[in-house]
Amino acid sequence: MANIETIQLHIDEPRLLTELKTLATFTDIEPSNNGTAVTRVVFSPDDLRARAWLKCLAAAEGFTLREDSVGNTFFRWPGSEPDLPAVATGSHTDAIPHAGMYDGTVGVLGGLEAMRSLKRSGFLPRRSIELILFTSEEPTRFGIGCLGSRLLSGTLDPNRADTLPDLRPEKDEATLATVRAAAGFTGPLASIRLPANHYHAWVELHIEQGPLLERESIPLGLVTDIAAPAGYRFTLTGLGGHAGALLMPDRRDALCAAAELILSIERHALATGVIDTVATVGTCDVHPGAVNSVPSRVVLQLDIRDTDPARRESVMQAVRRDCDTLRQRRNITITEDLVNADSPAQSSPHILQLLEAICTQQGVPYKKMVSRAYHDSLFMARIAPIAMIFIPCRNGVSHRPDEYAAPADIALGAHILASVLGKLASE
Ligand code: GLV
Ligand code: MN
Ligand code: MN
Image (cartoon, rainbow, N blue to C red):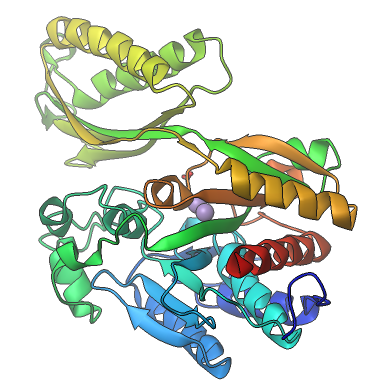
C-alpha cells in the first residue's frame, strides 16, 4: 500500500485555476469590468447552483455526500479504518457583496484538489478524509459569521439560530428557519452538532487577507492564533419629521447621533495603540431613508476584533460611556444588542509541528502568524485540533473584487495541505 512517505504528490494547477474561475461565475451580480466581482449570498440561487456544481465535482471522485440541516456539506473519502475519527479540511463558498473570487473558495477547491492529488498518487488513507463546505461563513444574510461551524461546534443555540432574521431588505419577515427550508434544508438545527472526538484534525487553507506574506516575500503562513471577533447591533431612535419644517433646535436626528457613535468607536479602537484592535461599522440602515425626511431611526452593525478579548471589551466599555453622553445630549435612545462575542483560538502544536516539518523538508519558507480575519477554524477549534495554512494575496486585499492570489501560491498551498492531510490520515 502506498504510504505518505513514499508517494509523489502533484497538484493539477491548471484544473484548480479553471475550477476557481468557474465557481466565480456563480455570482448574484453581473460580472464587473474586471470580471471577478463576486456576490454569492448564502441560499441565493447562485449559492445553490455553486453547491450543485461542487457536488458533481466531488461525486466524480467517488466521495460520499452528507448534508446537514443548515446545508453544511461533507464530502468523505473513506479510509481503511473508517470508524476512526476523520481528518477534515474545507472552508466556505459564500461571498459578501462585491467580493473577490478567492476568499473561502481556495480552501474548498484547494481542499478538493489536495484530496484528488492524494488519490492520484495511490495513497490509501487510514482515517477517512473529509472536505467540508460550511454554510454562511459570511454574516451578510443573517448578521452572524460562521453560522454553519458555530452550529456544528455547539457554539450557537439552535433555537436562537432559527429565529435569526434575514437581513436582505426585500425579505421582511423571513428568518433562517424559513430561508433554509425554502433552500431544501429541513430538520432540527440541534442535529448538526458534532462531538469533540468526531474529527482527528481540521486544517483550513485560506488566502491571508492581509499584506504580511507578500510584503515579506514568504509564500506560506502557518496560523498560530485566530483573533476574537465580536458583533453588536446599535439601534438609535430619535424624532423624524419634515426636512424643511422641523426646526434645527428641535431636532433629535438619529443619523447625526449615529455619526458621533461611529466616530467614538473609531477613536476608542485607535486609542488602544495596538494594531490587533480593529473596529468597523459596516452597515447603517436609515429610517425612513428619504432625502427630505429627518432620520428617526438608525441601525448600525459593529464588527470589533482583537487578539485579546479583554481589550476588546475595554473598547466597548468606553463606547458605552460615550453612548450615555450621546443619549442625554441629543435626547435619543440607543439600544445595544449583542450578536456574538467569541474567544480567540489557538492552533494545535502537533499539527503546526507537522506543517513545519513538511515545509522544511520541501524547502518552503514559511512564517508563523496570527489570523486577524475569522474563519470556520475558529469554531472547529472547539471540537478538534486545528491549523490553518495561509497563502499571500496581492496587496493584502480581500473582500474586494480585485482580491487576487497567484496560481503558483494557490497550488503550493494545496500541495502543503495535501501533505499534511496525508500525514494526519495515516496517524
Ligand atoms: C471573514 O470573512 C471575516 O470577516 O473575517
Ligand atoms: Mn470573507
Ligand atoms: Mn473566508
